[in-house]
Image 1 (cartoon, rainbow, N blue to C red):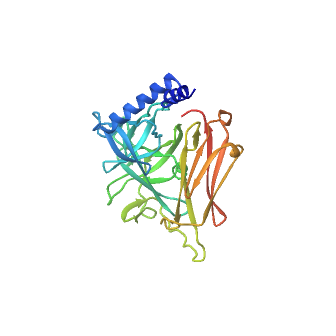
Image 2 (cartoon, one colour):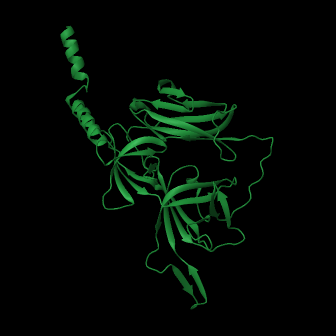
Image 3 (cartoon, rainbow, N blue to C red):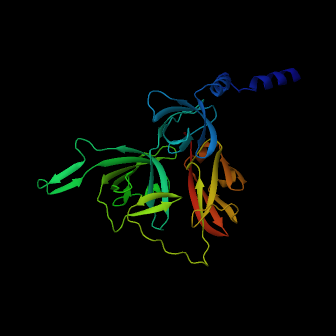
Length: 333
């Protein structure tokens, strides 16, 4: 009996079926080969150290990428590699062995001011969408000439980018003396809502407003902000702690997923040790695997009866609500 127990243990060491053993063997071989390949690059994937297989191909600014076995990535996430920033714009949902994908080099750091007065910046992939014209429209002979250049910029989906919309104006121009502003005409937030998601912002050339547009310094860099306004001064007696939860808004079956919170003060400086608590609510909370480690939460479930159910993560600072994320349990990646 002991012989057969040991035999069964050895047979199941790399999988409980022939198919599982073949998949695991393939993963092991791919991992060994990939780590020794010149195409395997050390990168940062949304801030964490990771390895990706990067196919240089013939295009300098667009790369086919593959994950190592048991590592994953999603659309709408940033990759920092070779002193440049890239945006993952495609990711295959078939991740049984590895994930195929596509990333594009970001070429513009879009800056704008929130209603609160805070200035935010996000890297994106900017394309000139002007077609079939010179970028100018003329009326009444040469008397009036209007710019009609069009651009389209892809940005990662988040709480800031989803709020961009017409008639908001931003700058897409490297000319610091005579910059060209653009007016947002559309925010397409649905066409590429895979993974973390991407928003595609369409813009039309607009007129410079000397009274409203301002050159300001953001983190040591001068940038043009359209329709700038002076934020209201914070009252000294009020201490505001801002928090932001990062992680996928879908919890996939049989996959451990990590969620992390970052805290900042009203000036954007990171707060390292705030007094906070995680508040996690769900109809299926008692059946979930939940592990809380400081600023990180790990969630896991393999019960397909939970598909479509939601989990709400909330951050409470000094007992007061600060931020939240709603996560949907999904059966497909």
